[in-house]
Image 1 (cartoon, rainbow, N blue to C red):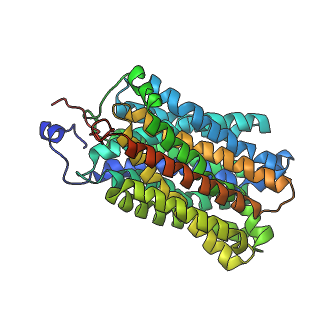
Image 2: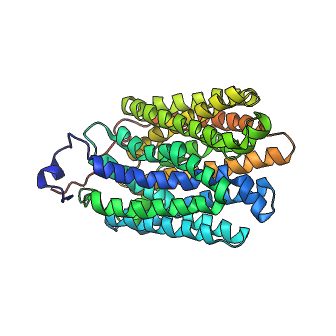
Image 3: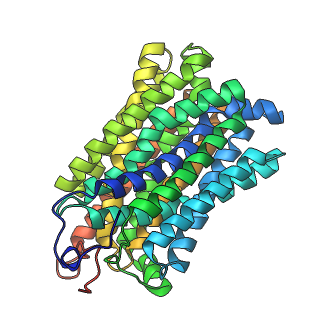
Length: 414
């Protein structure tokens, strides 16, 4: 049975991993990753069911992303005083309810509303879970702990998304969200059973958390994610039709490509965590530059089934490699407002999700074809490189004495 942290645990750095708790936190990421990305693989089915165009069906993707953007700051600020374990459980319970509503949605409008509700807990969960993982990780391995939580999202793209997509294609798209709701229930149970009380995590207040919004480095880092990450979503939102209509693959091969994308995310997530522990800014630069090259190359690679599948793997890898660095940098520059900053990272990434889906839909609707979103994505990644260059330059202009230094994720209480 999981017990409360001892007094020694509260004052001494951890030297070993709390594996059951990490797995429980990652399971939540698995459920969130499945529901976030499975919609993209099922867009043709959703469009056919509601008799709408595929770009219109893409609004369901944007609605989920908007829910993340709205929910992340509101929940992180308003629930700043809630004990962290209780908050994690409540967030996953709300996530489960939202996905159950998706299953029951009778119209496309109600589906969009259900996807919005499903997205509300997303950012706050990942924000609090990332800080909890950093608290439970051995000393000097914060980024690896963050990557461990994000690994659940990456694994979702190998197992959860392809499996749910296959189920949705064969039994009906609603059944995919039945699976997601079941994962949500399992996560609530796992968090309750295996995550310790997290009494060493700092409890703040809404005013303190909102202070993150007054820090230029926080806002600039969030903007890097919101812009630079959009390219991955511009491609992935329409990946199913790209693979069938451009690469010439069968519909049955789409789950395999989604699995390759997920394997790429796992590889990128692990590599991103390792690189971020060695140098946060360098890891972000490396991931953004890789995205520029890979997305530009995907415009041509998408015309061949082999190179298209390889391109999907690399797009997933470069995107996932960016996330641990961004999350860790926000923890460093947010000072005492880490919960809101960490949650806002996922709001920023879902702004990228919404923007990528929207921009990808625009160029497709304009008749430029299903490779055009990759070109748009490369431009977004270039913009991310330029913005992050500016961000780092501005940070280095600040004197060392006034620069925000990394702080502990634990409170000073003994």
